[in-house]
Amino acid sequence: MSYGSIVDITASGASWQTAQQDKLGCQGVDASRTMAKTDSERMRKYKTKIENVGRKYGIESALIAGIISRESRAGNVLHNGWGDWNPSRGAYNAWGLMQVDVNPNGGGHTARGEWDSEEHLCQGAEILVYFIGRIRNKFSGWSREQQLKGAIAAYNMGDGNVHSYDKVDEKTTGKDYSNDVVARAQWYKDNGYNS
Image 1 (cartoon, rainbow, N blue to C red):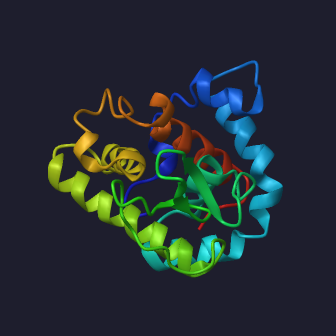
Image 2 (cartoon, rainbow, N blue to C red):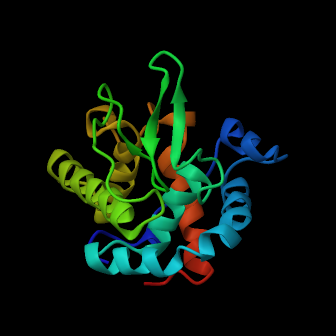
């Protein structure tokens, strides 16, 4: 892919904190792969949409599936399409499978499409492509794969919080976002998400 290959990115996987979502007795790549596998049956119903969007935006379908697995557990943790409850706002922060940030103090996006629609996935892919461009400009000396991993971290917390490759997840949720997403995406790549 023009943005780099997900299989060529080194990833340490999920932190202990993230792995505890499933009460796993492990962390790292094994935990990420286990959670991706847990989500795979639910993910199957979105596979055609994921592949269509991946082709449209030049993003590996496995990466889109990895983000969906991390963000919404393939829709399993959403409430009528909404997620990331913010008690201080009395509202949810994010919409859909890819959890597009609608918080005015966060991403401030306007939700597009139904929560599980191709239109929603297009919006998530557009946000990721935007961050790929931002990270490429900010870190022009990084390899395409490093830039892609930086953009995955930025999808979670904004490109202003990506300062170095060796600490790419320093400010992400669980301090493992890009490493976990990449490890999940690598599992999906090995299990039928090849476009």
